[in-house]
Length: 225
Image (cartoon, rainbow, N blue to C red; front, top):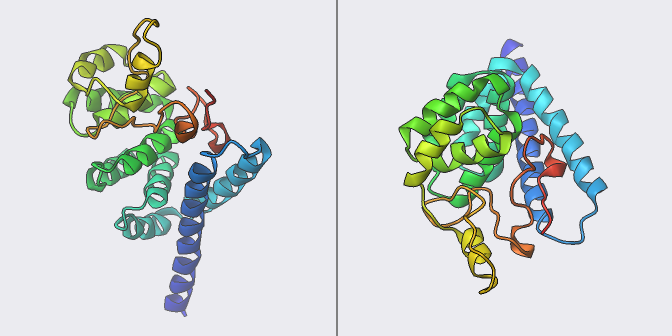
């Protein structure tokens, strides 16, 4: 009987993981269009929150199942795992997911950035500061999160930024859009592949870029030109 109940719980948790991951990916896809009403994004937000809350209530068992799913390296699952670890205030779990994630892929960098910008507890800024000091492959993610959340780690951010790539599609477009316009720096942290960590490129292709600074809702991840 216990084994049957355990399998039942695993099935429920797996469904919550898959549904939350799907909703996150749908929001990103739909936000790239100009036709999407804001109330539609709000409904996705509410549904995502319900699945994430259920996973928090699932405790360690839900987390262990989430870890088996993250091996699939999908955008939605990575986002859900990081959001769940932050909401459960498990810094070690966040570090584990980031360590195992294939962050050479821009879409996974974006998913990780949005999860941390949304869910990172405010008093964890010290971990971000330490990560910026290491200047490793997490730099694009942590720099974007520090900026979007306005975390109190400006000295570490400024010290790390000279080692970050200096250009991305958004920065290049901003500098060259008008020959008579003064040059301005890239508005975002960049990935090694030359793409913005938040996906911002200005124009229709980049509308689902980053969250507004300090905002926590999926419905507020869209910024307009």
